[in-house]
Each structure stands twice: as structure tokens, then as C-alpha cells.
Amino acid sequence: MLNFGIIGTGWITASFVTSAHSTKKWQLRAVYSRNSSSASDFSSKFSSEVTEPIQSHTDLSALASNPDVQAVYIASPNSLHYAHAKQMLEGGKHVILEKPATSTSAELDSLFALAKSKNVFLIEAFRHLHEVNFKILKKELSRLGPIFGASLNYAAYSSRYDNVLKGEVPNIFNLDFSGGSLVDLGVYPVSAAIALFGAPKSSSYYPVKISTGADGGGTILLQYDGFTVSILASKIYTSTAPSEVFGEKGTLSVPTITDIESVKFLDAKLKGKATELGGKKCDLNLKEEAELFAEIIKEADWDAAKELEALSRAVIEVTESCRKANGLTFKVEKSQ
Image 1 (cartoon, rainbow, N blue to C red):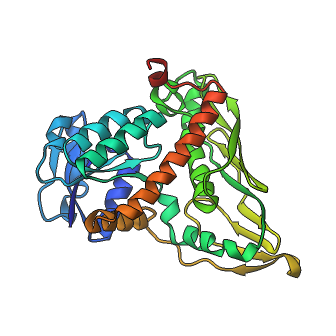
Image 2: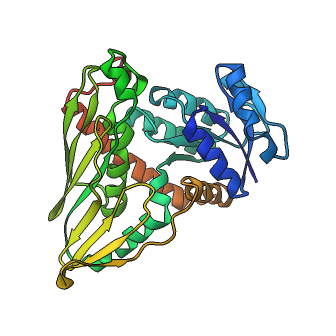
């Protein structure tokens, strides 16, 4: 059983804790929040699921030095990921870091180097890449023969855009907090493309900039040898378009790029007749990643961690270059 702490008390953290507990491989031992009542309230939701009392912290150094905590899951605002992860790694904790792991590639390099020096794991949490149906999608690429292209989409209207329309600047649409659609939703299809096809030869981004100065959405093009992946990602409108991979022998289609419920093969010679290939979707959408991360840590599987590190590096190389090419500069970059 891995005893872990958390930084960030939002819905994604609650979902991770529930999913982690369901694996029987994790146990929540500590909660950090700047507000003591928030930490206590969060802890109370899970007190019946653990065998030891959940400790509350309002001091990060106390969490980093807590001897009862082996790993820390971090889901704080994007701009705080680097500082929070750095402090936990320096304390000798394994770190599960919600996407996007860091604001810049330089920060990511620094954290991976620190993790190696401390002999602990740093893992970025791309939950959708560990789902059973995503794995089936990847495995079945061989059905397609030569690949001609792909269209990967994730566009979902955010209620926080309502705040933007009122003249406010919520964190997720604030460049000072390392926000924007590309690094929030765009990383899902970008990471999916890299997991399926590897790092692209080149990338470009055509954003829709909003009043906050951040990107509300846009189109990303990833160029590979012989084909292009087109990505539609947005937080200011919704699309119901499926995600598809096109090949000489047919098309693989999924209704969404996350929480995939169906994987279909449309045979080119049978006028697009669909064959269902998918498995049963997991009820808890972070359980599969929690299972994998526990095994990596417990088994000291450095080879698996190295593959995930390479993925993280490739993703931020794409998002960073796309941002910079469009003048989407984070506050942390202005101070460097």
C-alpha cells in the first residue's frame, strides 16, 4: 500500500483519490491546502476509506517532510506545478503531477533531473492514455495499413468562459497562471497523437485568442512522414465530432479522445461497415492510471517511467513551440 498526500482539493483530486483507493494499492494520508478548513473538509470525505487518520497541512514543508507520505499527487493551478513538485521531490517524495506538468520545458527538465538525483519517480498524469479503449485503439492501428492521416478532437465549452464574457480573468484563461485552451484541453489530443504515432516532425497552431490574451481554442497541425494529424481543441465552443485515424484499409473511430466508450473499425472495402473492437469502459476514469503508477513505483519500473518521461517531453515540445509561435507567453517566461 502506497501512502500518499495531495496538493489541490478540486474535483480532479477527489476523482484521483476515489480511483486510487479502488485499486487497493493507495491510501490517502495527508491533504494540503492553504485553508485549514478546506483541507479538513476534503479529508472528511475519505476518512471512512482509510485505516489511518488523514493529516491536514497548511504548510508545504510539513507535507514534504511527512514521514508517513511516500508519494504526492499534485493538481494545483498550472503555474504552481513546478514549485510544488520541486519541494516534494526535494523531500524525497514520488510525484504524480497533473497535466500540464509544468509551464515550460526548462522547468520540466529541472524536475526530471531532480527526481533522478533523489531516486524517486516523477510522472505526468495523462489519464486517457491508460484507458483500456485507448490501448485498443493503439493496438489496432496495424489494421489500417499505411496511415493517411488523423483527426483528433476535444472541444468542450467551459462555464468559466462565461466569467470571461463578464470581464473577469479566471485562472484557466489567464497567461499569468499558465492557462489557455492548448495546455488545458489541447494536451489531451496532442498527447494522444504522440502516444499513437510518436513525436511529430513539426507542429503549428492556429489559435482563437480571447479578451484575456489567452487562447480559447484553435486548430493544431502535427506533421509526420507521409501524413498530418489535425487537432481541434477548444474551451469556448463544443464539438461532437469523433476522433478518427485514416488508413488505406479503413478507418478507426472513437466518439471521444478521453473516456472512450467505443472503438470501431470501418472497413474501406465494405463501404465503411463498422466492427466494434472496444472493451468495457472503466467506471472510474482515473483508476487505470492509478493502477499503473502504483506498479511503476512499487516495482521500481524505471523503463516504464522512462517511456512516460519521453512522452511528457514530446508533448511540451509541441505545446511550447506552438505557444511561442503565436505570442502566447506565460508570466514565468517573461521573468526568465
